[in-house]
Image 1 (cartoon, rainbow, N blue to C red):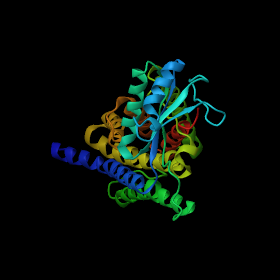
Image 2: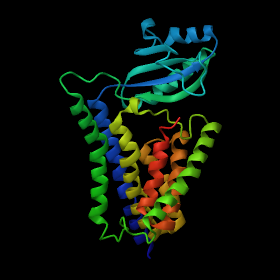
Image 3: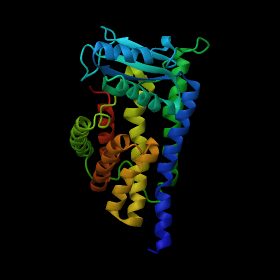
Image 4: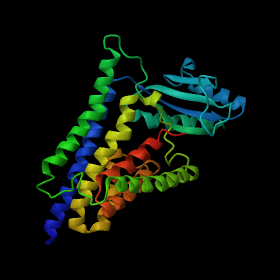
Length: 312
């Protein structure tokens, strides 16, 4: 194949992943502007003097950090593992969009300056503010679902099926394996990938699979998106589309590597602690796709790993 044809095919392979990233980013920003504000929080351990010194800086009542809050451990507010029973929660609220991680970094810096130790970080409460009375809870949930689940998924699914036949892309029944074996292979990939990510989380606490997510914190619409619709969009865009087209241009194993790297524009970050676990998972699932050509095997592996985000 001529070089210019390979280049054009490679650019075509990147179109749907970029559409996926743009749709997720765009509708997430729309959701952030129409929903409540977020809160970034960390749990901190130290001596009473260190914790009080940090509280004097973070607590909004002292005027140093707007929307700052400090809470001691109670029966209703329990420290997450590995924090001890005397740990305290320090947080900053009224956040929108890209303010979440800078606020978390500010809390970590203030804790270090106070001589205390952050025992759990990268925890967020999304859409914290109360639902406006002019809008019912059902209407709010429906709006969140439309913006963060259905609309991005619709873009990706429509884009895939519109060109699947013309580009000879695999469909849901492309694999010759029985469905039960496809699902079993997905489980066989998900379990060691989960163990590897847990190990990574022990080596680098801010990475790995310990997201700090709870359904109560993010809501059922976002939880369903993380476990079902986001994996479906990733498999259509990064495996069935990208790997299939890219391996025609650059070969199978470079296409597998590209599928792992293509997660970065979807997560729109170059932070290795966030991107590396996703790249590892993406590459492993891409290998699974190359071996099985199965949407269901890849979807099972991706969804099981997404479900593990909610495990302690």
